[in-house]
Image (cartoon, rainbow, N blue to C red; front, side, top):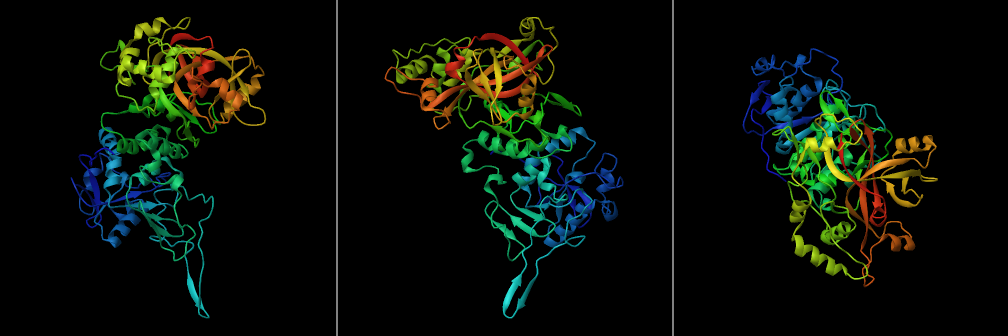
Length: 561
């Protein structure tokens, strides 16, 4: 985890003197709550016009504070804590620079807090904390009757419309990044840290937190920074955002805590793992999502952010990753005439035996500038790997030879065929890549779509249910219609994937000694649709490498928005 520190100009509420103070270091409590709809316009918030008055002793009048923040002040006093951090009062909401700096340091704030108070019940900042300013509806009671202690079990109400804290996007990272959490629900208070949970109740059916939705920043099963990022992205995208423009900011603290300073987020995609991070797909795909803009924030179709706030989980294929077939480029701010590489800046994180598998892909002409021979009749897998490594040594040398670090925009625009060349916009990434056209066929009696070649033969699948795309294909009534696909990268399916023995033998690679690869090689592909001069992402899929090699492929430039 990278080193992080509190932001410059860090502010907290002095709950004794009831004012805002700026401190470099202090012991403080943070508040996590739902903003909701601001029904009282008079509620105090930090603005450039109000912050100076808020710094004066007594400047935070109880009558002007949202009830949830006022209740949090009461809790701090009762627990013996002097300083409280609440975003509404400690971030100047109409100062773009201050807001940006404070949001970027959100991870540091929650990691540094001694305790995080979580107002887990209520639909607005003015609801208050149950049990503080207003009584809870249900409490646990215990009576001794004839020598036997009788205690009622208090259970949370399912689908309670006021239990919204754990459905909101912003609150997810607040729970993940905090070390100690004190939850206030409508029925109980409970404390949680990384190792234990302690309930206010004497008897409680919730003995353990669900490990699948654990709020730990990292887990042993994650195996890598990217593995942790994927797990959090899955949970985060299942939540709602009041403003989709918050898609990146509400996850930035987690990203910042996982990755080092050199790696950046490119529209929500970690640049250090850019190729692997492109391989996301929506769980249900109930909507056909296009690139959009929300309050000046771009949500490109190729980024998971295009699905953020829609409560449709973003997932990743559980496959090995061996390398990319393309180099992606984005606008170079230092030179408007060119685009700079996004995925040759860092040595990629690849799975074991990447060199062997990429050498086979190169022999199938999957990378334009690299030729490599692999003959099943002559070579063994060991021979192929040795020749590959003797030529390049490591994956960074291989990448350097395969792709240039920059792309001229004029070169990209000249290759738009019959499409009218348009200026490259922010949020557009471009690459020279292999493309082909394939058919989509709905699977009978179950969700999902198969990918078939021009002969109608099954060659791969679309990832996820993609319900909206499936309905579109069904309503089209033309199973011979072809869709454009581009090759992204190389992965490996476990042999445990549900393939028949005959299919596994047909789809796998064998050397002259009849040894088979431990995983079946597949090409990760992106289905695209053209809108003028730019392509848009429609769906992620995969195709067996042996089948991809047989297809009629062409090299072209694709600007993706």
